[in-house]
Amino acid sequence: MSSIRRQSIISSLIVYFGFALGFFNTYLFIREGGFTKEQFGLTGIFVAFANIMFSVASLGMPAYIGKFFPYYKSNLPDKKNDQLAIALIIPTIGFLLVLAAGLAFKNIVVDKVFNNSPQLLQYYYWTFPFGYGYTIFLVLEAWAWQYRRAVIANFLKEVAFRLMVTILVVLTTIHFIKSFDVFIGLYAFTYLLLVAILLYYLHKKGNLHFSFSLSKVTTRLRPKIVAMISYIWGGSLVYHISNVFDTIIIVAILPNGLAPAGIYTLAQNISSLVYAPQRAVVSAALGPLSQAWRDKDLPKINRIYHRSAINQLVFSAAMFSLIWLNFDDGITTFNLQEDYRYAKYIFLFIGLTKVIDMGTGLNSQILSTSNYWKFELMTGLILLALTLPINFLLTQRLGMYGPAIANIIAFTIYNAIRYVFIWKKFHMQPFTIHTVYALLVALISFSVCLVFFDDQRGIEWILIRSTVFCVLFLTGVILLKVSPDLQPVLGTVRKKLRL
Image (cartoon, rainbow, N blue to C red):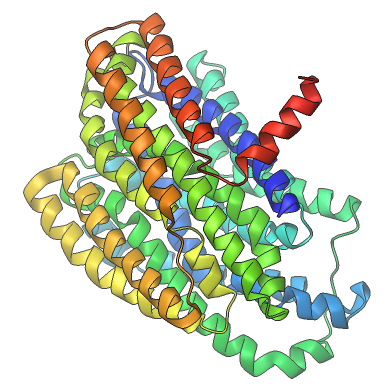
């Protein structure tokens, strides 16, 4: 667990630095005199479209790497390992099909569905290079994780990408980039640049191996590979559609859809802070989980399950509380466009959805690396069946608040089903008495800050409110020994600081 803990901590620090940079970008987008809500909403739509393109074009290749990498690694020399070549060629072919469909059906479907968002139609073609770069990067990222290169992959995705956006936004703000047209054209190629950097890094580290002849491992495991990626691809497709359908339905249904999508995107960006540690934990734990299933080491899997759940819950509960306590003050203090205040209650539901998802641990990764990966597709179909109609109905009735409420309903049911399945099949479940302790400590710390500081405004009160919450929360977590990973971390810090 120490290796997972170390990579998780380093990756978490990188992720949070990236999110700090992302919030600076968001500030540049939404401050008074910055970009319009429609322009900010367009960047959110680019990400939503990229997720759909990835889910269609990738054809389950990240899961194929995660599941079968140990078999290739232990049975083939590097020069004869054809897994990476397969994992890159198939998504490229898949993306060509996506591109062909996107071009063929633009006039028939896209122009009619998004006819109330003219800027999206204007920049529609730029979504494709962005989506292809995103697809290939996520495949290479899965490869990097298996070589314990999670730190560099997380740095590129969470920091380098946002740094490039910062540069583009600043250059546009000072009019070095003369128009939004040029901004979008450059923005569309950011992930392709990250792909080139990650390929170069893996090559320098000796982790980049291409063989274009089918190996004995591929030949022997082909039936299992095809069956597995078919189910995983289907599950991934419905999951990603469910994840981004909220933004798309806002643009498609609401008048001048990109403006409310911009407000919704702010709530999503802020709620991503609540979710940030999961990416670090997943990237560090996926390789060990895959190996543990191969070794039939259920106690190790159970330890990872428990610790991932409590560590993620501690992070997410604290971050949700801090954001909610400071939301209104942040809008006023940083002179943001007043319409973005409507994002607060969107964040409430999206943020709680993230807390629920984080608190149930790595149930998705445990299922996808086990022999029950077919269940991922089944639960994904249930999620899609819930998400699409509820999103549509609530968006019509409640406007931009509807998708956030729909998602907390759908994802709560989705996680409950996977929780019960893992409990029944493997006799594992992520909750302990420490789960209750974590929630109580967060609730008490939140309530104290709300009672004493809720009406105060200004940067100094944001700092005071946040400091008091963190002191109360961390004190409770330490005294109650909520996380078994916290004491070793504190010991390391004391040793480094010679305390």
